[in-house]
Image (cartoon, rainbow, N blue to C red; front, side):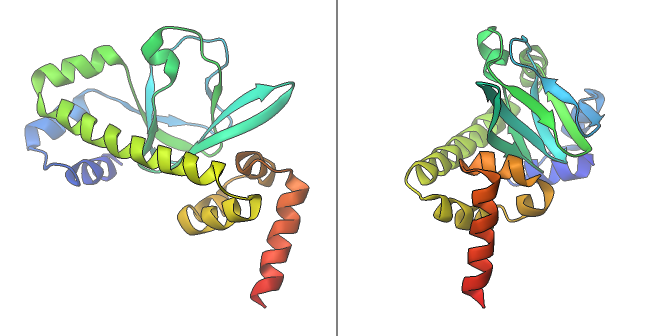
Length: 192
């Protein structure tokens, strides 16, 4: 699984054998079972996560209802706000599939940056790319009808359709599960 991570990093910069060894020696990789809560509302945590295999869901509970705001799949990461501001989390992170993730703390990051300063550059490049993608995704969401949101999901993240329970997918799209079913049926009918 570490080869997947090394392949991802090599998109930004090649790694030396020493750098690969440092990453492996950090023992960051965890196997996590489906249903595991990585973070609960009200908890404090200093862990950031990167998904090597599997799927993590980010959601809030508002008036007793789960509101999904993101899914993190292979080669995507999430650093909870509480990891940087030392306040309790306002949301949940849960594994919706058996997953292999890496988990890191700011202190661990500093140790790695001290040994290999160019990792800090790597993290900046990845963060900038993720920020642009997140802003684009948010803009598309705000400016789209539910139908367009679903079509965009089909175009950009089709794997989620098979991997994520329909009620969570509907929540992510900002619609009810019934509306999602009707939307799917309509799109199938239009393609015939």
